[in-house]
Length: 224
Image (cartoon, rainbow, N blue to C red; front, side, top):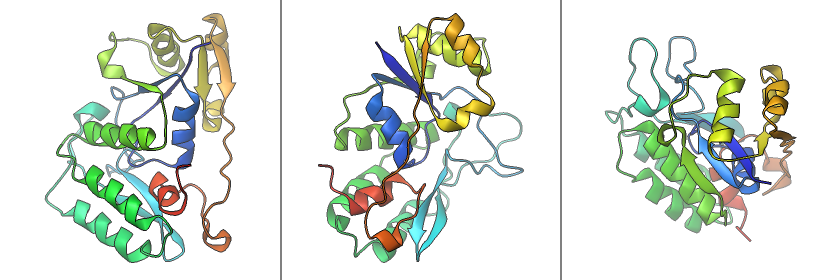
């Protein structure tokens, strides 16, 4: 069985995202779909994530250039007019300096923040692939933009992408049940496997907050 997973290239995503990578043979970055805007802003999981700041799950973000109309994810540019990279460094040093793995974690994240790119997808994919290797993942990574262009939308796109890399099984998250057409996978002879990821509390039990960036996990847990 060749198992694949497909996901947008998110900004320092949460632990469940890396569990999906860990379990997959091939992971496809969905980088040529519409950038998910929130209201009139450019806020989405592609450019922001939450950290534990003074006991609260609080957003940190990478500012992006706002454009009118629809943008594909791989066309979104980072707005470097604000020193957001240094802002994140300051937040980590202030709120995570007592974490068990602070020194090794801050060295890793510092190097990722230094990645020289104004393209949001390139920045996120570099961070995700580097962290995945740091965690010991052997998964093969592929960008949607490197595969043949597809006209399909929604579930049909996922099925076509899985077929294009020769996968016969697809790993989907729990949040996909509301919009995903399971019958389309069955018709294509692709087995559906639901991730069903539940994070095990880590770090100090009274400080654990679910759904935070992988940065939070790396600060508190050893890769082993």
